[in-house]
Image (cartoon, rainbow, N blue to C red; front, side, top):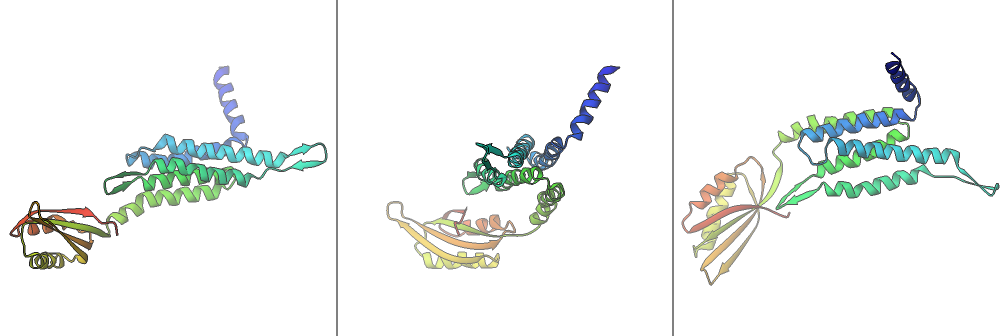
Length: 243
């Protein structure tokens, strides 16, 4: 049958042309990073990473081709194109797409890793378009290690975090109550960095704000329960500190 033979011959001819090898490698490498992001449920996933990597590869290939050929000007001067300027433009422009992946929800900041991945695949396309295939494969492997194995190791750690414990109380003995709460924090191995207070004459309520540094062992609910049981305490809640 002539159709399959013609089809496979066209594929072989295309792969024999070195211009298609970088695009194929960009598709595979960018897809590997995007696949991991897709599994992690990120908005910028498989398609986004593939498109960024292929696009940056194509732009570098075009700039290298223009640099190799150059252009004659009036038969005297020869204009030479610098492909490095294209790479610098890609790195600058991809910042807008990476920034769109970073979202702030209250005190939580999400999307930094995905933004870094988009920046990486843009650089990966530059490396592939420059013909550094071994470097591109090694970089892709290391990034996949960071996104999988290193991420699991990081989840095993108890990071140092900064929080504010805000206590609303009707007690007029603020110093005594602050000392009692400080003892609770110390018992749970939390370091008190600062203490602030406020008073509302209209409602007759007082506010104590404890700025705390702690190893996050998920002990905050226990502290909230103990502090909430003190006499005169109306509410006790945690918020992220800006330290």
